[in-house]
Length: 168
Image (cartoon, rainbow, N blue to C red; front, top):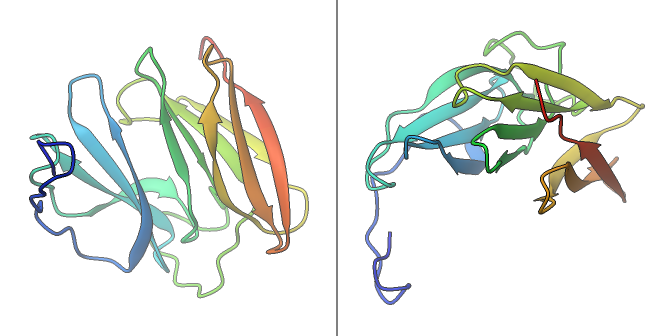
């Protein structure tokens, strides 16, 4: 954490509990920070919360968001909705998976309008054969589309533009 534009830094508490990498953080409408974490070989994303602007974080807990240990991407919209681009991998149920080979297909967009308590909009964006990994991108200024690219089968890059619904 820095208060002087990066001249000095203070560490927050360390969040531990799972093998993980590639977390994403969003600020909710109430100012709470929520970090979702990729957790290898668990079958779901994990969650930690900070109520003090990132100075301290709660212990990681499993979510109900299925994930095969793959990178995901969160976006916060101006109306406070949260967009999640990820591999929901319906073959895994909750946090009970133990597979060492993640199935990174399909690729989906989920949207929450209640601070990530639930995901009222769920849409499969692509499920053509192959591995759809490492989605990353941006939401356009009008917030009509999320634009992103993903790794396809470890050797191609595919661009995707998905319309963000105005009403869920």
